View 1 (cartoon, rainbow, N blue to C red):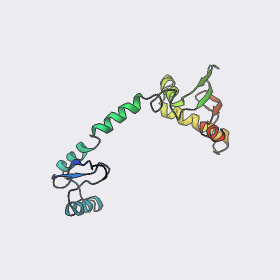
View 2 (cartoon, one colour):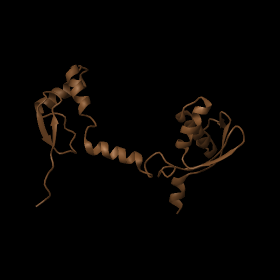
View 3 (cartoon, rainbow, N blue to C red):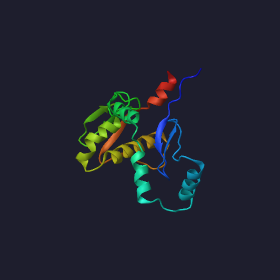
View 4 (cartoon, rainbow, N blue to C red):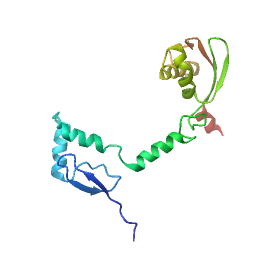
Length: 164
């Protein structure tokens, strides 16, 4: 005999009736009739009532397992915002003052440095990524620096993993 099915209690987005389904199902309605009403509302531009909108928004992301998993991922040295992140790459940058920085995680570095230059971390990271793209020959837009910061070297981890 197979393992027992675990059903999750949900509230219908249309009529608020409680129904049960597997956690992996994307069902939001209790019956085919409610599904048809939901389909019509979603496809014809009709607006949900404020009560229905509130019910739907309150039900999203409330599973305790998901909340625990997200918190654990943020604290994990492999998935969190640390130098040991599995997507982090090695970069060598030169500051406007001429100081050389060898860093492991560009996103983390940009979060620390960009506010000092009156910018956001995303804009700094994007600009350095554009410099990298130009150096690789993947971009026609010639970008050499961002506010005096230059890219000397980078290690594309995805390429080095394929070689080994």
